[in-house]
Image 1: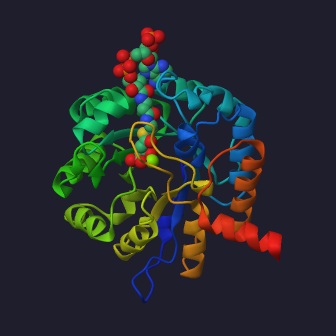
Image 2: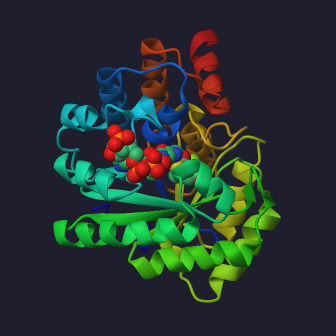
Length: 317
Ligand code: HMG
Ligand code: MG
């Protein structure tokens, strides 16, 4: 179970939250899309370095089909290598179905995430199910989670734009968010899967959700394919959102979303929030060190601009 610092977030005179939680998704969202296979021991070292940075939650891997995502076929080995997380840190994993949930529980996971989408075509390509079928699949997953005392996050992919169907109607996206909450997830992370949204769309969906939902239970998951992620974070902060997903180094993308590149880089997000005086509890230098150590071990792509700038400053003085 993750400790929610954000519940204590104070809103400041400028209306922005005083504190946000960052969910680090690099080891999962990042490494699922890397052409270079990273060894389980390098993943463990990367995650352990991230665990010392101050994140309340690190999404460490996925219990999906190894045929669909061979990059994460070593999920159980990674969890065994990790052992118990340090105090105050939660290691979570993605699960697509009951088979994945069983594997996650066998590995001792205390928090999982189920994932569906706002557009039918993407959902079919990603998990081989319609939106309705995926929600049905999650029912036994939720039941197993309840009896094993495992907490569950929900993801909504293609919340703004689908790579196959184009712009997504905000009311259709909001309907699936409500359905996820009805199933019993404790938070929904809203995904701009292909990094195509701009603040107008973020406001549009949050307008729909504000009718009957508290901002406390929503997270935003922006990919940065077109460089709009930070402006979208700003829009979401203005609407009281206090949970953001990010990926160390800017690793990532979804193998089933053509053209999607990495998540908003954690370094870029922390730099921005530090500068805005919004507390995160995350140590930027330690995140850069974790990213640099991963790159020294494996030839991964790290598009983070802040990481590059910090490395250049370090190198050139
Ligand atoms: P399927 O082929 O329809 O599944 O895949 P199936 O139930 O017919 O099973 C086929 C085979 O897979 C069987 O094995 C099952 O045992 C096995 P076989 O009999 O052929 O040897 N299998 C499994 N093995 C291990 N673990 C499992 C599992 N389930 C079935 N959990 C399935 C359906 C959902 C499994 C597949 O489509 C899948 O794994 N998809 C994964 C997709 C994925 O990981 N996408 C990326 C993550 S989502 C994302 O990145 C977006 C996000 O970041 C938010 C955003 O940015 O928007 C979260
Ligand atoms: Mg993603």
